Length: 167
Image 1 (cartoon, one colour):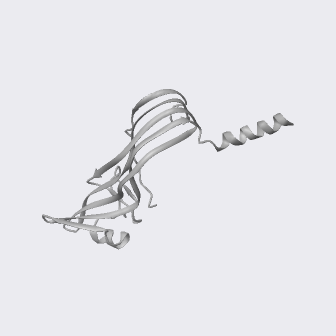
Image 2 (cartoon, helix red, strand yellow; image 1 turned 135 degrees about the vertical axis):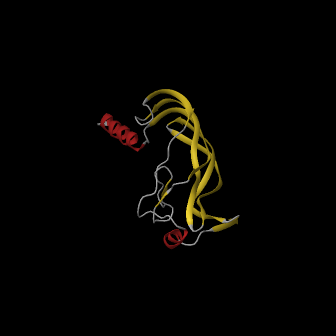
Image 3 (tube, helix red, strand yellow; image 1 turned 120 degrees about the horizontal axis):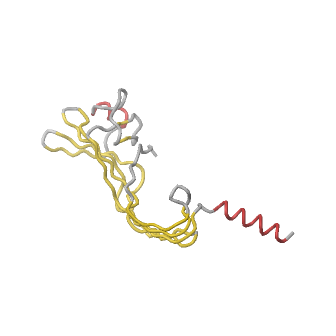
């Protein structure tokens, strides 16, 4: 009976873990990405910098203002404007240490996430997204099937980011 309880507790504990066992360290910091042909959706904050705009996507400043609302900040310079829309969340910088099954974050917020649009003659000419990303890291252990399973490794993160959600 005692061994059954131990087995049940071990199974329950293993199901609550995020799936990683080992040691590792990762750095994270600010990232900006830009595109001169962004796919801007009608929902505020939803943008894809890696796919070209399609019919039905926002292409003018008037459409952007109609669907996303007033920009949080507007900067004027030589015949163009930069419209800045803050998105939810912070830009983070710091380090995450991972010891056995416990992540130990040492991070600080260094700014807000935002999307800026360059508007010229009423048209969206370019877009830039500022957020945060993992920069580099090293690990040894089991870090899930997605991250290579068992083993050791190190390197930089050159992940392509797809569409961001509006949240």
